Length: 398
Image (cartoon, rainbow, N blue to C red; front, top):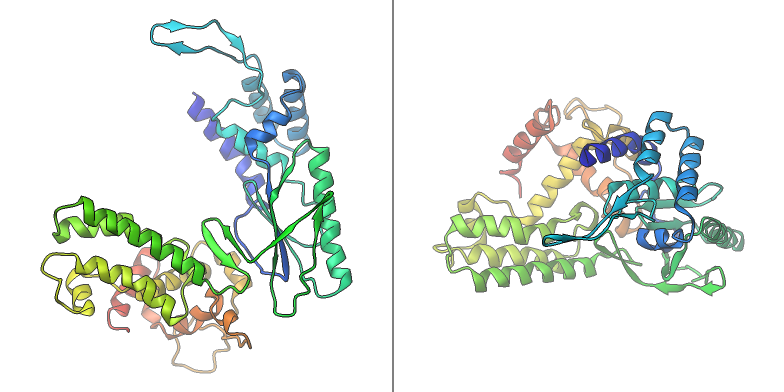
């Protein structure tokens, strides 16, 4: 019953959260304060001084205020009311005690309610804000004193919201990220504490520096993958392809391809550093030690990591243009004027930029490759069909 109930809660409130609480970084602005709010456990502990009945009443009032259906709101409140617990040790058990917290520990309900309650803290903000769980990023252009003042006013507004709602930002983890060669490195504060600047931060597992070079992320990914490959080398006696290939695919390669469409290496040194991991892995397989890398890949039926990144780019493009993300794709890409008859029917406009770093973004670097795909590939009726046709096409590329 508990599992089905949690599924009900998740389904009912997913529509409320999906429009605002996203983990997608749409734009990169001149100055971005990275803010870390208190963990959910800390947030609950702050409310621990409030009687349980008042907390349930507050939850009911807030959910009704958001326009949620009364049946689900009543179900949540009934689930939280009159709960008891006891401790079992072997054959002995304690007496039943009333649960003093409004949300059962370990329940998905706590996470869902947390996201609902922070869903309004960006109201009235004038800059871009991105929320993902308890991570928040506020970004804005900071070229003029007025623009820098606006960012500070938004930080003040967030700090007042946190104080009013008995929640707090972890100011030690709040950092300022400055972009741009002529950035004035303006200092900002949250409450009475000045925030420190940072040149590199990890966001959802990806290291991002203030130059967007991605070299540090390439170093970290290669280091993790090499470490896992070393563990396999020490702990596994067999060197047959039936053993080594599944281990490499499951334990090593994911470190090199996690979110790689965002941090894809562009410098030759970074490309070689990442590719070197797969070179080393294929050389460990019995019978392939003395063969060139290209022959090892061909015999194993594998693509190079560089070609796999290109494949991933094209799959992402298909999702944006013909798949499940067409709504987002409409704002990212523009169709080219059909002035020639020799195109695939879905040709995109190629934009020009002065900065090389901008040319490395997925929305720019992938357009030329997409335009060069044959019409039979881009007109695939489904994503699976597109992957099969793309693999056949890429077998003769690079």
